[in-house]
Length: 398
Ligand SMILES: Cc1cc2nc3c(=O)[nH]c(=O)nc-3n(C[C@H](O)[C@H](O)[C@H](O)COP(=O)(O)OP(=O)(O)OC[C@H]3O[C@@H](n4cnc5c(N)ncnc54)[C@H](O)[C@@H]3O)c2cc1C
View (spheres, rainbow, N blue to C red):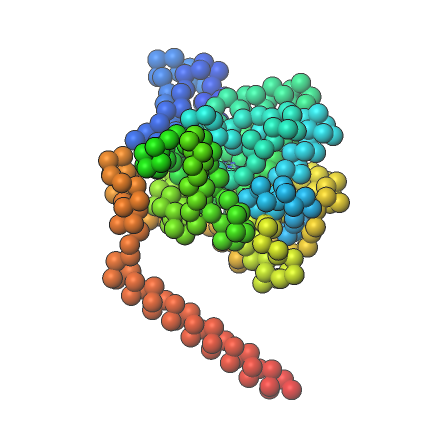
């Protein structure tokens, strides 16, 4: 029976809940708002299927990418509405249009909770478009995916690496008609953190939040905004570096415990394609970056390559290498570092002003500032030293 001793060993993917034949597992929120399995020991038949499908207990080996691209959806409007280069929408359109398939991904419900949902209609793909920076609740999506696949339907399943790894483990076999796409993942806050943050703003604006855009490209892709629309038609717009929610997220203050030691990232989820932001694009293909968004597309399997090739005409692409992608986007390969004030945040966030708390907890101590200063100076000296060595080597070669 699944038994979580250490919270950092559970991704909350719900594979165990979904496989349980006696329905004795529920996914319940802890104090931090993250979902964990709870087993009813009276009805558990000890079949151990929950352990067999846990992506934390059963890890995939890493894939070596077949191809790596910087890519842009040619439709500039879709690109503007997407977080990166709009490649997700192309894949989703294709599965629905060409295969009469079903697309699973993360959407926002009417209570501003992030949930996985399915879409079979092209006009509804916008519900899944865009990154939502909180962990989505999988609900019964894994069972629904399986049911569609068993009917012979095509399915595109998208999510974080742990959600894809959970689905693959749950299915226990491969399906020709399943395409799995994961996103490069920094880590996920809980929906409760988002809820408390929104509650503060709702009070300030005197109205209910009805729309959240975590990646508003009002002034471009790189310097994006966090925006919220309210029922009373007012709008909150805040640069990502100034928004308390985004600063706490990027500063690793309130991610799920497993995100600090993620064993399924670094191309270990079993996905066919991995999508992210190609943040380093301007150092490699400066002419390609028009600041409307460039996706990083990592093609992991032959199936992924087949789909990518079918969609090539609808994209602008540049071929790259995984080493360059990782150099400029480290969260492809490594987990976020645990913030020293994470526990303090979760002790206090329900009772205090969100912005003031985040400001206080992200403030660096004097020792930390000194360490960062010395580290930066040391790195500069290293880079300078290396450039001199290279120059001397070149001169000697001449
Ligand atoms: C929590 C999170 C952290 C991320 N961290 C990074 C990062 O550090 N570096 C990086 O390069 N990229 C990161 N991304 C991915 C990036 O933001 C884009 O989602 C990705 O590049 C796809 O962009 P797109 O333009 O092709 O499609 P978009 O339309 O922008 O993306 C939609 C896709 O994202 C999925 N999605 C959105 N929110 C969630 C969610 N909460 N949980 C699961 N899936 C979700 C949808 O299911 C859909 O497949 C992160 C995404 C999320 C959700």
